[in-house]
Image (spheres, rainbow, N blue to C red):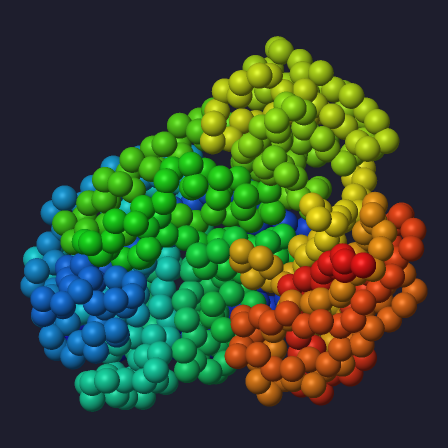
Length: 584
C-alpha cells in the first residue's frame, strides 16, 4: 500500500482522534444495556414498520465477475479472492479496470422505492478490503485507486435523502484480505496479508467506521459481518463509535455483542426468532456479488411469498442485488423487483407495520396482523372455497383488500371461523383477505390429527417447547434444537380418530461427542425410553424405533419428550415423533 504524505498525516490524526473518541464516548444504549424497553421500541419502530429493504453487494469483485484466469470459480462472487487464493497484488491490480461510469444513485434508489423497499444496506467494505468510499485510512478505495474518482456512497446517501429511503452500511470489521493483519477465514494464503490484527483494527477498521458514521449524513443501520479472529478488546474499540449516530441499529455479527437484530442468511426461520428482532437476508439468484454466469433467478412470485412469509413471522426481508462492474443492476433483478413492487403497490397495507400471525400454521397461506385486523394471504384457494380459521373471536366483517365494499360471508362455529371466497381470486400469487375482529384474536388450539393411513406425525413445528433454552430452528423441515438444558421438554396435543396399535419412531440427529443422552417419550400415561446415538452431524437425521403403544379409544392425547440425562453439549436435535399403525 502506498499513501501520499498528506494522506499519511491525515491518517495518523484520524487514528489518534478515533482512539480519543473510543476513550471518551460512552457505549451506545443498545450495548451498554441502559436502554429501557420503551426507548428500544421507539428506536426500532421505523425498522419494524419497514419490513422490506434492499441489500447491495458491490465491490471490486464485480470486475472478475466469478472468473479468474479463464476459470469459473465456485462459490459466491464476492469471495472470489478467497476461493481462488488470489495474491494481494494481483487482486489489487483489478482497480485499474474498475470504472463504473453507468452508476446512477438516483436510479438505484428509485428502483428500491418502486419495489416497496424502505431502506438500503450497501457494502462499504467487504472482506476483500476494498473500500467503496473515499477513505483517508487507506488509498485502497474506489476514489483513489480507480479511474472512477468518485464516492458512490456519498451519491447514494444524497439520493436516499431525496427520496425518503433510509441508508445503512455493511462493513466487514474483522476479515480483510488486503491489509496486513486483517483476518481471513481459514487463514492467510499470501505473506502480504500477515501482520498485527490490533494494528489493523486501530489503523483501518476504527478510522473507516468513524468516517462512515461521520461523513454521510444520517445512517440508520450498521451491518457488521463475520467476526473472524476478533477479540472482545478489538470489538470494544469499534462499539463506542456507534454513538456518532444516535438511534442507529446494529446486527448480531460483531461477535461479542448481540446487537439489535438477528440475521438468518438465505433461509426463513420456521416460526420466527422469538422475542428477537430479525431480518432474513437473501439473494435473488445464488450469489451476493455479481457473477456473470449465475442465471438461477428466483421467480417474482417466490420473492413476494418470501416477503409475506417473513412478515407473517415478525421479520424483515433484506433482498440483495449485485451490480456489475459498470454500476448496473442486472436486468433480471430489475424485472423481479418491479414485479414485487406492483404487488406491494396494491397490498402493502398487509405488510408494512404488521406484526406476526397469531396462528402456528395455515394450510392456505399466511397471516399478518395490525391490532384487531388480520390480513390473510391466500396462496392456494381451498377446493371448497372456504377459509377456516381456528378462532373463537367474533368477526365484525371480512373482504378482499382490493374490494373493500364487497363483504365476504362469515360463519362462526365450534371449529372456528369460516370465510367464503369468491370463485376466482384476483391475484394468483397472493390474494389478501382482510378480517376485522371484534377485539383481540382468540386462537383455538387445534390438536394434531392422524393423516391418511392413520399415521400421527408430530412435527417439531407443531410442538410446544417448554423451557428457556430449546427452540425451533432450521429450514425446510424444522427441528427442536439448542437443547442444552435437560429441564427443557416438548409436548404435543394430538387427537386419535382411529385407535389401535402404533409403532413409535423419532427422527433425531446428534453430533459425535454429544451422544449418550437418555430421553423419555410419554404417550397416554405410558413411557418409552431412548438413548441418543451419534449421527454424522446435527443436520444428519436418523429414524429410531422406540417400541409400540396400544391406544384403545379415540380422543385427545398428550405426547411429550423429556430428557432424563444429558452428558454432552445438547440432548439432541428432534425433528419429529411419529405413531404409525401396526397391521394386526
